[in-house]
Amino acid sequence: MSNFAGAIIAWQKQHGRHDLPWQNMVDPYAIWVSEIMLQQTQVAAVIGYYANFMQRFPTIAALANASQEDVLQSWSGLGYYSRARNLHNAAQKIVDDFGGAFPTQFVDILSLPGIGRSTAAAISTFALNAPQPILDGNVKRVFARHFNIAGYTGAPKIAQKLWQIAERENPKADAIAYTQGLMDLGATLCARTKPKCAACPVNAGCAAYKLGLVSSLPTPKPRKTLLEKSTTMLVIINNHEVLLEKRPQTGIWAGLWSLPEIEMHEIATEIAQSRLGLEVESGEPFPIVNHAFTHFKLAITPQPLHVIKQTPRVMQSKCIWMPLDEAISAAIATPIRTILNQLKISQINTL
Image 1 (cartoon, helix red, strand yellow):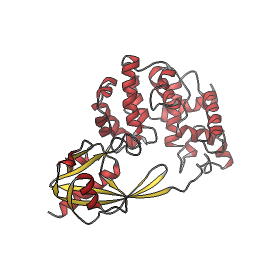
Image 2 (cartoon, one colour):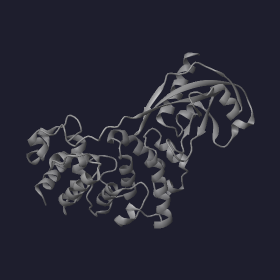
Image 3 (cartoon, rainbow, N blue to C red):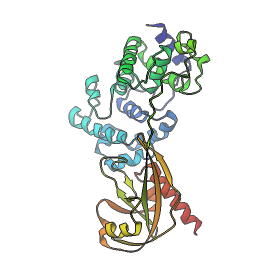
Image 4 (tube, rainbow, N blue to C red):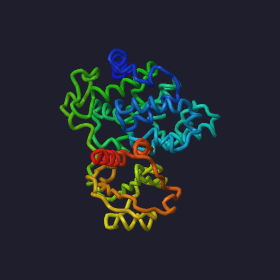
């Protein structure tokens, strides 16, 4: 065992996190769900979602048998919704291909939708006592600083170097403590900003600490100017109900409920009439809601429309009238929930 691994293990046992909801268990399903939720999301944000999700879908079979609508609703607000769809699809694959039991072979875990090498390694290590090296975002930062690996960690050549380090340092004994320790260290001490280097258990051998490179490593991702897009969303109100429209199964917010969307140059009342068969009167637009995706920024103008008259065309399968409070808790993206909360506040203020 290397000095690096030994120090990480000793630190984790004394100072690491030991009481997270998915720790102190060997249930691969529970650990799998936690690892998927923790992708690109901080622990504090995951804990509440995890508890509710596991209560609603306590087993692989329960998740596989659920509708995508129910799964997305439980995920609503956590973001990166492809994770939820992959989790659902993977549960169905486990039922179909593995008899409902979570696979025990690493290659089979890797075959599941939404599971990459590092996630599969964490599940294998924590749940199956079959240690594999991990390399999530926090661990990349620890390795880049400690071993002075310059270059964007997402670049193939740099990632290959980091995987070689991960494989070399991974111990044969106490792999669970080591793996958890790496995650804890990156999340608590070796943070992206304001790292607590003085308290780090491996600072004596950290190249970045010695050379004054902590603030410059890991090398930031090359910046690209994000494309800015604008859209108008129709907040169509009929008595105490709002019209939601199912988004396509591909693209942003795939499979979620949303508000009907139109181009900025289109006239909202005319589109409501031609597309939805609704005669409406227009209200004052709500404040613009800005939302950033990985590759672009979206500015949403919410346009309230009050129904005067409707025809049966509005009952097409991808549209549904829903009471406002129910809509707010439905499987919708965070910006849509923000808009609906604006609507609720406006209704309260007019009482």
